Image (spheres, rainbow, N blue to C red):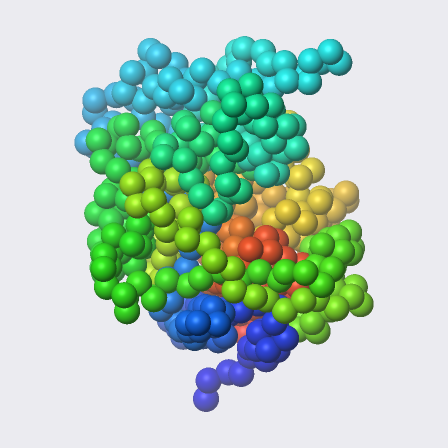
Length: 465
């Protein structure tokens, strides 16, 4: 008899209460006794064309794209096609013109933001090279404007100087190329801090330079095909997979958002209390009523079709296909990476102590992170994080608790995407999973508990004891 799951009832109530339009779930375990999928709710809340969510609805991945791009970069590192012609490794300096095959002049030209009392937009020259490791671990100094107010202010100031209109908010539109989208100053010298940002987008740009292929072309051949998946089940261009096929185009989910009704106050109230304090399925955050999710028209997500492939945020996938990626990493089957290369995904890759300290400091206020983050504790019993070549890594899990627990083990790897999606792989516990939603309420404190309950129950019922 298949186990029943408490999280399914919690998620269903959240759908019924209008907290989230729809959810897709996948989970597997190492010994093969779990192959789980579940979908509920709506892929579209459009009054003129409502559609149900199903297990194969195509979702915009946002930052869940980063794992896929990171895997592709690691494939380059182990490929004899490139290593024989030039030195390519995690510590290859991509801002050093002495390495022409990997040199990124647009990235190399970026200064470091260094405001003064008299000039808040002053910059200075970078003195250290940016490496592939820095790009993959968010220690390059590359940030995101939507997370860094100082970068947002600089970007608006710069565009005003050039009489240009700012790009639409991240997640709704892209410039044509990575340099056009992300050529703002660095936040610090490479390796001297940690800031979540566009480093993996620059990594995808590097892959295109090295291989002579687009990132999407490379990914179809070296990730999708190697997993035995149908072309386009993971892609940057869903509109190219089914051109002109109206019925197939409907496979792609549309966005929802809670609009009006004091949602901003709800978010502030829940976030100030921590990123998982809203009661799952209650329809309230800290006692405040929320507005129901409504359809939001976001045609920018799919257009224009000639945009570049942004390796940090631009992917789409059937989550069954995405689960196949994390399952391959869980069982270490070498379909994507050799075992010695795959280890880089499950070992901390931040070399500099100050950068690792900055990462853990960031995780002490994780309201911006999609998914459940246990806050690092000031004592030796708490969780300690590192960043691997592919995501947030539990470096030290802390003492496991019997009640309300710490279920994650050393080497747990995971991350999420701004539209409220997450993935995880825990080799020691022997489980992996994917949670998918499509809402423009990023790091939603009402959805966070749903993600937490899904993961916790999968670990408790199917993880190694």
